[in-house]
Image 1 (spheres, one colour):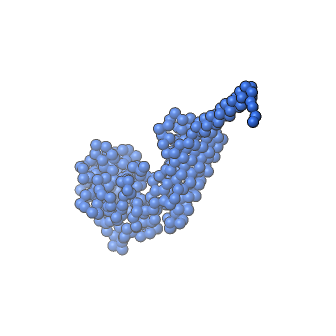
Image 2 (cartoon, helix red, strand yellow):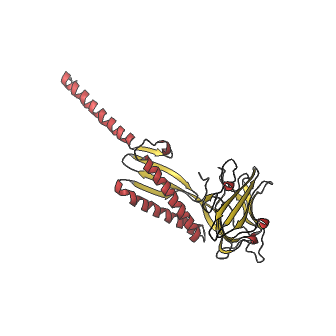
Image 3 (cartoon, one colour):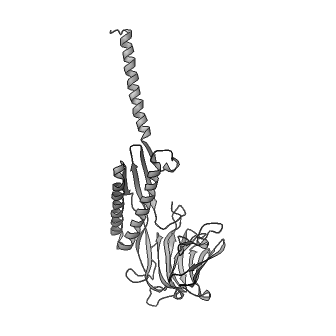
Length: 326
């Protein structure tokens, strides 16, 4: 049996202590190179966290623009639409990483799973808002059986109207979102005039009450972002959340139809993307107007941000134009 003198025992204790010290230093490095998933927003004290979150917001915006472009130009079927979106996301990932790689930052963005599909409804010429039937109707159903997701967010996004002519107060153009299972309705009425000294008036009725907004304009057209809650880029309280919540289809059930009334009293163009809805008759496919095509309603991307101090990973749901998206 080997015997150790006091010096040898002390050396072994010293070596063990050094080994433990190296281990603790390694652990400290791992902790300092912190890994966060989803909840970085509450970690502002972590070095680089603000950059990671700012880059996340940029990625979400750029991916949203890519989805919008894919819906506009790659709408022949699900395969081409998904391929176009995936290529757009890859471009966002590559360009973002090139911007940051010189600072020692690696960024990666990929499509996570399959997108949620819906329907894009468009009138792209400048004409009255009638249906595209052989005998066009002024009062008609634009979107049928539109279903909200389980989280309750709105099922219609990027609903924008550009009007070159507005009706008088006696012949207001009416948009209705009505619950398919009850009598609850959300109703918007639009009237006024465009051009110098013009005014756009919008009234919204919900099961909870009524609100109106009026915006002065000088332009030869009225831009009404129905789901964004603005008129000519200015907030319209009748279409926004507040003491009165007039967001599109607010207060209506989980499934609703969108209808137009007096479509011959307004002229211009419009578009919207609705979730989980098949193209509604009597709409045709492009290039007739109005028409409906398959579209991506939302998509989830996997975002990863790496530096020497921080690794941040998150799944981001992107639904461009949906203000209450999570």
